[in-house]
Image (cartoon, rainbow, N blue to C red):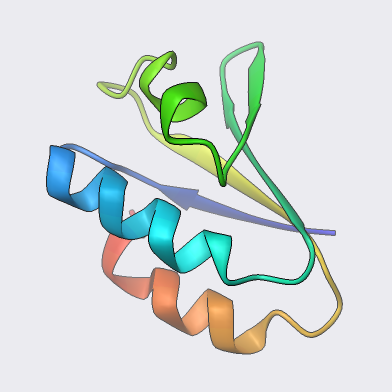
Length: 75
């Protein structure tokens, strides 16, 4: 399990993040405070408080490529 801190501030960023994450063959969650949602769920992400930083929890061992793609969202 790996954790990456990101910030999604624009609608386009959220849509792009979901498209990127949907291509993963492993589970990915987004955590905001005490709420956890499936990072592949657009509706789930919009239920979070996007004004705060988010934690991406990656449940895959071969996630290096995905982590590189997350660089533009990292804080």
